[in-house]
Image (cartoon, rainbow, N blue to C red; front, side, top):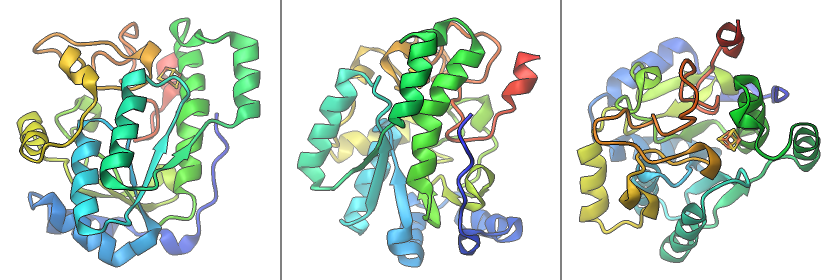
Length: 255
Ligand code: SF4
């Protein structure tokens, strides 16, 4: 598992403030929350994106408010070519310096040396181990020293996300502020915004993908399926999460 990163105490908010802010911004225009966060946190706010549809909406909204908004992303080394192609288009259109965080080389070499390049199909433990090294640890580094981050999580994504608030205290990352401005948005609202504003999006959506992560662990879904059912599709009893966005008690699932 990734080593926990130390966060400065000044970045913490308490549950009461998180609850108050969530109530204040619930149901409002996501741009109001983004504007508030940009004003309050400045360069100590980051937008974290894997360039999925929601991330593109938020990137466009935030960039229109503040063109120097810090954008961070994790390159797991196993992303689909379509995601890399989209990143190039985003760099051209938005003239943003995207901060890309990669897995730590020594940890990855050890893991791949011990378990091979595709161990995730063999057990939940190995899948979580791979996600820890390729996703969770780089994101933890990306969030070190920031006061708040923006995610594209929505309640409609999956059962594990139904309880998210637009503003949360992020326990997994030292109690910093986690903003989910699209928490209440539907699929239609996301795609209406993308089409209305002619925003670039990942070409895999046109091939039936509804959630896009690493190439070997993502596949297209069928109409009516849970949007995240194409992620780690061979796992039947585990949440469709990697641990970046929420704390999962993996040990209880292994028992
Ligand atoms: Fe590894 Fe798959 Fe997780 Fe990507 S999604 S980090 S390839 S287990």
